[in-house]
Image (tube, rainbow, N blue to C red; front, side, top):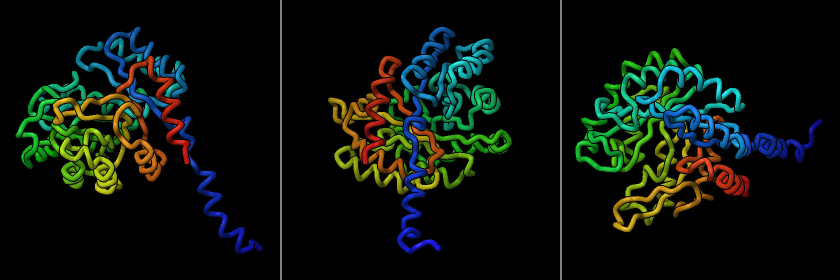
Length: 295
């Protein structure tokens, strides 16, 4: 018979045994560009830094068929797992190309993800301008939210057939510039569409001073619909109205609070460091592991 003391200790023991292995879970964004040699160097740098999981992004409108056919082999040779694939179409206005990704590339990505063994795509909510950092009054309207829904609707079935999750990423200048408006759109979409949790992107400059409260609020608002987590940092630019966006732990974010909130998410949600070059992969990984392993 199990004693009461032993019985009561079982949940704690189970939780300890299920504690995440952050050395395995942490991933890094690999910006591959469009040149074969550069892409392979970036993947090799991720492996050398200790990462086993990556998000890959490349210039869809500049790569050729050979690049696309060779990339899965490069990933396998490096022993890497692709957690997410950048397919950064402009969902609000697909004819305005953002980050070298057209609507046709997004359609291709839905099929191509399987070649990479990947189950997640990431796209922009979108903008009515081609400059991600430039606000446009049209971006902050319900009509633009409607446009996202219209664009995605024809893709629902193919996303489901390919067992893919699409994670929508936004920024303070784009359509759905905060967690509340992003959740409003997500509530109109099937659960194959989720959100990218990226606090700098979801914190209005006017709320920068209260960024810890904003961080906790966005987790509450997006609860149950967070499909990908990005790790970068932010600080106010000299104008006090815009952000500088360095890599993780290089700005003003409360990273221990962020890590604590990330720990509340399901263990299969990718956690991806970004805004760092290959030369920073190893040092950033070490610093992040210190944060996530701290108790």
